[in-house]
Length: 445
Ligand code: GDP
Image 1 (cartoon, protein in one colour):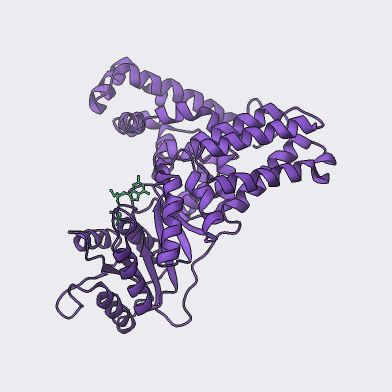
Image 2 (tube, helix red, strand yellow):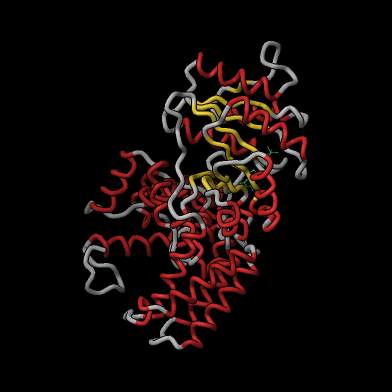
């Protein structure tokens, strides 16, 4: 996500680092580089222009000239301006005073509406809501079935056209679905509407008719971030044709440049509310402008990581891990396996590392990290006997061969794992005795 932009900006700042006072020339050169980075990221021209003007103005001001570290102050300003252009505060859903809250999704075909409907349903369901999905896309063959499949995966009922449910008329389906939700205690209705391949008057009219029939509390425009500037044009067309309250950006996982994310708010005046980052239902969250900005500047996205961990792990597991770390007993292969499985629950390892500060520099290596290698490690440990796991020193040559055969790996893989484990054990011993190797004066870190 946003790798190209992130790389460019990080290199702009690395040339600033170490500078004391900034000359007018330094400021102009930095502004020029940022401008190029934004243009390359496919950010809309008016957005680039305003952004650069703000950076220049603030860089010449007092906050920089009086700062202890002017160069760092400029980075801080860029961060703040990025947060602003991405929308400032995180936009939360506005719930209706009298349920159901009606959420209508609009956007082009292929934007990811149906997938997003499922993601939203699952996400809302996890927060003790009782959502209802509504199939008001009667244009595309299979759209109804697709939503039903998604609904099943999200454990959310789907209201679909059938005799009595407004067959053939999406406006009627939408209207009836809200009545159905009222009768059946669904506090949220998510309406999936029909898209077309391109902007089309008939599609806009239909979406507007549904809007008028159900008066949604939130109309969310769903758009594929990978189409860059086109996303901005489509966003404008839907704003004129249907109108909407907020934007959901999809396929951010495939968006190296970030042009749509950085332009949409400024051009349409509507905030980005949701970010969709993959094909799985879990790859979805509220869009947090501050976290996104620090991700772009490679300052890491530790908050998201922590929240993801909180969502994934239960209290007991965290306690167990903490007590392993704190106990006087030696770290064993069982602990090693347990920790590895916990971390893996968070998702592909490359995604995790990408959220950590400073990891942007290592992107190539991260992309090469292969979850299969972790599968192999897991298989090797699982092929050991409990005795071997708690006393790895007992794993001699013939046992290594047996373990390799049992796990479908090579003896060299087993050797590798055992060596690495002993290194990890040494680090753990040092940590437990209060002192991180290589960081003097920081006991217990
Ligand atoms: P709709 O026509 O707007 O309902 O779009 P769909 O929900 O059918 O999505 C179109 C395609 O995009 C499907 O193949 C989805 O799996 C895929 N898709 C949707 N959201 C994402 C996302 O965030 N990331 C990726 N990589 N693919 C996505």
